[in-house]
Amino acid sequence: MEIIKVAIADDHKIFRKGVILSLRPFTNIKFVWEADNGDHLLEGIASTEPDVVLMDLRMPGKDGIEATKILSKQYPNIHVIVLSMYEDDRFVSHMMENGASGYLLKNAEPQEIRRAIMDVHEKGYYLNNFVNRILLKKSHAKQKAIPSLNNEITLTDRERDVLKFICMEFTAQEIAQKMDISPRTVEAIKDRLMERFGSKNTAGLVFFAVKNNLVD
Image 1 (tube, rainbow, N blue to C red):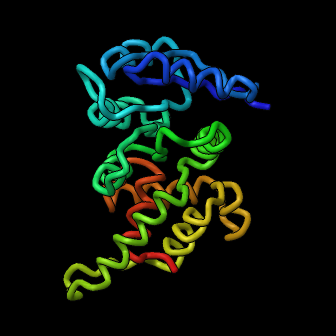
Image 2: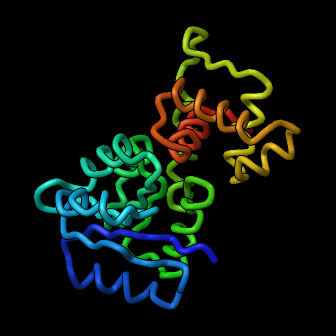
């Protein structure tokens, strides 16, 4: 099984060590860097090259919000999973729209943290019931707004199909097989949609699609 390299940033050493210890039974997860704030995290990113970062939000110095934005710009292949005590919908929306690939609360079970790590590494995002509830809430609120034809988002049939399959958690290879196109074409369509909607990563694209009712 492929080894997934993970870094963790949290200013509480006991919590940080607890997460590392709780995931030790999962032998395909290897912690390569631990940091007590965003500055410390970024110092070790280039040398340790993690695949996934578990990111706290409130930390001294550079906080998790700023560190996530920097990572999404400078290291777009690194997936950030927020691991925070903040349940506020605004934090979830802001982080998912600005580079995070998943959002977990600190009371998450080790099995869910492992699943989130594996999903973001394989598919680019992880959406649990907590995040889905916020998505549905925002989608419902948007439906109450007065519609405007000038703001209508139009997609080609192929773009809509690719977006639908991405939201269903299929990989590029699986989407290519279902649509009888090449994986490279799938990635090109995904990249085009991300650029068009201003999404930082796959998670942001899914978040945008659901929030704006672009998929059934």
